[in-house]
Length: 304
Ligand SMILES: Nc1nc2c(ncn2[C@@H]2O[C@H](COP(=O)(O)OP(=O)(O)OP(=O)(O)O)[C@@H](O)[C@H]2O)c(=O)[nH]1
Ligand SMILES: [Mg+2]
Ligand SMILES: [Zn+2]
Image 1 (tube, rainbow, N blue to C red):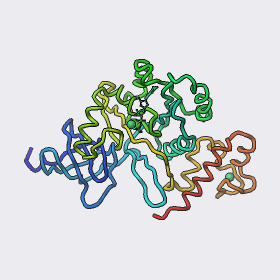
Image 2 (spheres, helix red, strand yellow):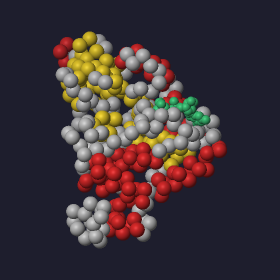
Image 3 (cartoon, rainbow, N blue to C red):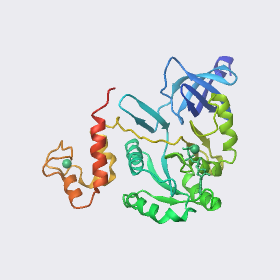
Image 4 (cartoon, protein in one colour):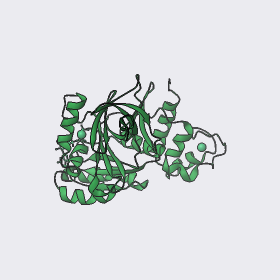
């Protein structure tokens, strides 16, 4: 190989912090930046990097993405991860979780074409277990699998449940702060703590908590197995979803789509709307329809 050619590498983005990225090229960690002010790179992206030193480079090209998960507010969107095949929303018995965030995460997953699961962690906290199970029932009824684990109380059982689900998949753990995402990652990736400290040093965040999104390969689960840890969020804006994308992202709407009187029905106040009829009959819950209305409103508010 010529010297020129050896300076071009294909790598996977494994961490992102502002405009600074960490990429993995066959085990070699590269600190990377983008050209100009671009911040359109996501963890999980396959990129072409031009080396500027043995462990530094510039991202020249992002390979075509299979999927892209993102959030957005009125002003801009924020890429969460690329090339995911599935997403796990982590909730816990304690602290309590917000239904709004779970529901929005599910809509984001559907819109991105990513399979969604829920993980109920901290089942060792028995006082709030029954109530939390009850609160998750509506999601299970929609067809989303709910997996009960306890990273602290039953680490072995937790691994036995999660490992088969993760084999051969590109997964991400998302959820509110304190639900136990990093605790679950630490079970699956024994040296995750060390890796986080390395990255904190490399990206200069100076912190040891989850402040950036980080991808870990899971080679023992087979090739193409990886899992992403992400910082807890308190908001999940979906301003980027169009009306058409929204109605299709609600799995419970599916049997009724195309059955409204008006082909351009927005399912809000229109007469002979199949969705509104399903809500009235209790086939679609009010909570879901209310969220749909909110998201529709958000999608009309974007300024970009
Ligand atoms: N009782 C109990 N506590 C747990 C369990 N799993 C995690 N915790 C605790 O919950 C707290 C939060 O865990 P983390 O893994 O840091 O949560 P996280 O979701 O990564 O939080 P962020 O990084 O802030 O988003 C820690 O004090 C953990 O020790 C569990 O199964 N049972
Ligand atoms: Mg964390
Ligand atoms: Zn309708």
